Length: 199
Image (cartoon, rainbow, N blue to C red; front, side, top):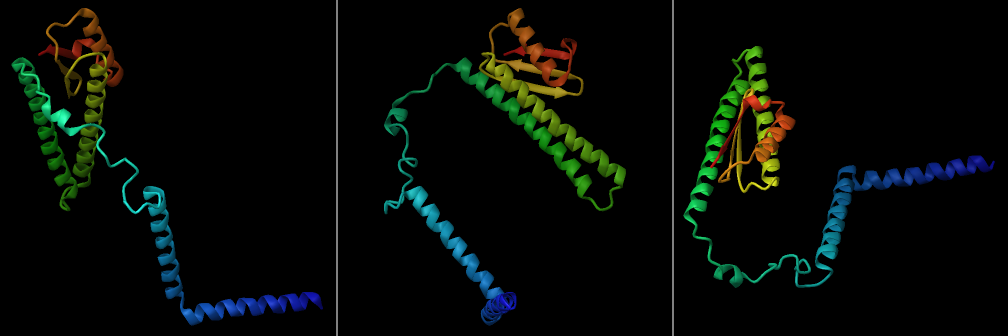
């Protein structure tokens, strides 16, 4: 007898819930819940990042770390050789990036062309992947060589050979060995295929 009464109570509760849903509407209930969730997220964001203060700041995170006038009063170094080297390395990197962008644009056009054959699309995708791999390897090489104490470095990978341009007056044998080791680790290219140029 108790189980029948319990079952009837549960059925009545379920019917009341269904009645409320049908009366209010499923769509409206979902919208109301979404609005409540968004409101809770906004409130939580406001509490966490403003600490409930009315100033709206991020507790000092939006303030500059130094005095701006200190930076304005400093004069940049006027060494013409350094400026020329910086210009050379910047121009080389921009030129390399421009050539890569043009190649990627052509390959992407082949992939996007509906009239291209499947083999042409596959070759274009392989070319895009190869360029992305070269970009990653060059970036790794440049970062590692810079970490060894060189001010600037540009690596240009071309198949199974690579050219490394570093900012240095002279290169010692130990430095050349370090550069060759980094290149071999990242690309597998032996020292025979490595050209190191000091600028």
